[in-house]
Amino acid sequence: MLIIGIAGGTGCGKTTVVNQIVEELPAGEVAIISQDSYYNDLSHLDIEARKKTNFDHPKSIDFELMEEHLKQLRSGYSIDQPVYSFLDCNRTSETVRIDPTEVLIVEGILILTNTSIRELFDIKIFVHADSDERLIRRLKRDVNERGWDMNETLTNYQTTIKPMHDQFIEPSKEHSDIIIPNNTYNTVAVDIVRTIINEKLT
Image (cartoon, rainbow, N blue to C red):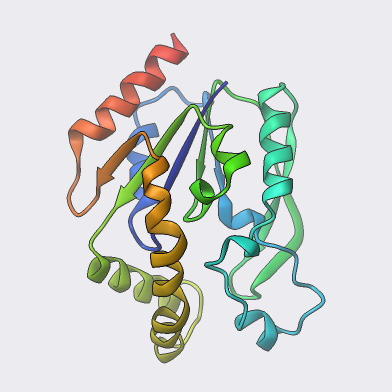
């Protein structure tokens, strides 16, 4: 199994890059796991307390469970991935079955900050985008898709998202093998990654 980690700041376009990489690959040969599924279970907190949680800090992620799941998949075993609700700011009671595949893509803003997780990646990618562009994308997503108030999102960006990006996410870029600028479609970088995957599949 080839495991690829794709990191980058919030709103940098990781999902777009993932889609560009897999769109021409054989169906069923690539599985995708999102870091967002591994936010800690906050069932012991009410919704207001959960909304105040710093979700951009590495401690917000259950890296132990993620590591366990990645190792199980690499060993040929299926996993039951948690399902996270951004509206409730918590895991749901549901899970999604992920079966072993030839290629596994793991994406998330904090995945390169954890040493144990990094060591499981065969290829480490960091997607870079301009900070203003990332803010605009985050605003649109939180307001339109996650039901957050715009003022809440702006305050969160200033007090939590940007400081955490500067402290944890941006420095994790030094662990990457490939940096993809995502202000525009970077054909060369994506094609290089796709070529590596195709070589693994053949």
